[in-house]
Amino acid sequence: MVISTQDLSFNFGDQQVVKSLSLQVPEGSIYGFLGPNGAGKTTTIKLLLNLLKVQSGSIHIFEQDIQHHRINILSQIGSLIEQPAIYQHLTGKENLLNRALLLRVPVKRVDDMLALVQLTGAGDKKAGQYSLGMKQRLGIALALLADPKLLILDEPTNGLDPNGIIEVRELLIKLVRQYNKTVFISSHLLAEVERMATHVGIINNGELLFQGSINELQALSQPQVCIEADNTVDAANLLTRNHFMVTDVTDNYLYVPYSSKQKIAEINSLLNRNGHAVYSIGKQQKDLERLFLDITQKA
Amino acid sequence: MNGFILSFRSEFYKSRKTLGFWAAILLPLFICLLLFVGFYVKSEKLTGMPPITLWLQFAGAILGIMGSLLLPMFTIFIAYSVNSIEHKADTWKSLFSLPISRWAVYGAKFSYAVFLIFLTLTLFVLFTIGFGNLLSVVKPDLRFDNYHMEKELGQVYLKLFLSSLGILSIQFLLSLLWADFLKPMGIGFVCTITGVILATKNWEYCYLFPYSHPMVAIATMLHGGDNPAKGIQIDIFTKDVFVSMAIAAVVFILGYFIVLKKSIK
Image (cartoon, rainbow over all chains, first blue to last red; front, side):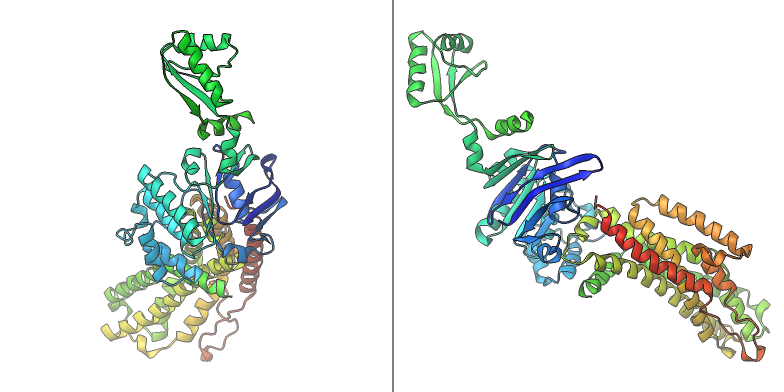
């Protein structure tokens, strides 16, 4: 495991913000750390970076305790926390040069990073004049500068337009696949990470509600049969009378929990026999977005 | 040690385009230039004065306000500017998540503030000597070149530098803890006024109050019971200077533990 926490808890005064969190982030994964705003994501990330002191529990990164091997661990992490920390009075390039000086990274790497996040043209512009998206990209370049093994990114696509979001996603996938990095990325939007994450942790009110691979998350969601019919209300009544459970009815669709292929055929013939026009019928996976809402709202 | 040097260099790199850095250079230049112009315009009134008096008038004009106002306020400003660079950019969190020890980051920042004060006071010495000698060239009636007080000036400014360290350490900590301008500035201003009042009233314990130190430093600089034949003798290490250095050391170490405990918001 690249990151492993045991019973990690943290209080701000009386308020418990993180409750016995046990994260397991495998090497080479893109771990989506999900939860609504205020769930405790940023606090957890600050604990992982030793910006906040561990109050109870423990954190191991690269199999080393963060409390005792802080500098060694931090030298292998690139991070971006909330809005990027950028000196507005310096140019984008100078921001990178300053960091390169601190991390003793060759100057050539600065140009490579600018090219990677497509800021070469804007490198000599004051960072204060950058758009939010450009600042975010510069923040990612800063995080990648020292070629870290682990990237910890807190909502890195905040303020990016759809193109920017896709670019960041592709960049992260490339980093993991080609360079064997591990990415820990937090977000309040499942849709944003579900296309790249290999693993997911869902947190709400400081508690970890789910942790596992993206497939395990999908398996949690019960598949259903989606039926497009002419009169959905009558069709729903008919199915209910015939002992089928109808979970949802809209103007055009009705939904029945999926159990087997034969059941789909039975539903279809039942509706046909009773004069209902069926335009489409098929098995459907409940989308993860809804699943995410279910999981976080139940708590 | 490496982390300290890297952080110190980074402090220079970050601040070299800010007012905080340029103020350290422009302030002595501007004040000495102003004085130069004043002496140049009013040179008739000054001709015939003995060179030592000329120097005392020239250097004394700066030293007069240095202790009471200039040095404390400038120190407060430098302490603020060195820290505000991180507050404005919201970079404390990235600074403290670098693979560099917190000691190095904190120590380098404090040392850089000390360096800026040192730089300013050194430039005051150099510009005072430079402009004084320039006056004797452009106005040969003013015989600045007939007397030398480089050593004494250096000693006075060294004393002033040491006497500002107490204020610097306190203001540095205040500016590090508070992001806004008004709190450290307001406290610093009130304390400076208090310090000046205490020092001008010759309160017997004002050597214990750091904001009085620059003013006390000026008052205690002349060595008592001097033989006039020996010229001016400067007393650098008076008890107020020792108190200033002790406060600086204590607050600096205390500040580190506060930084260590403080959650990085």
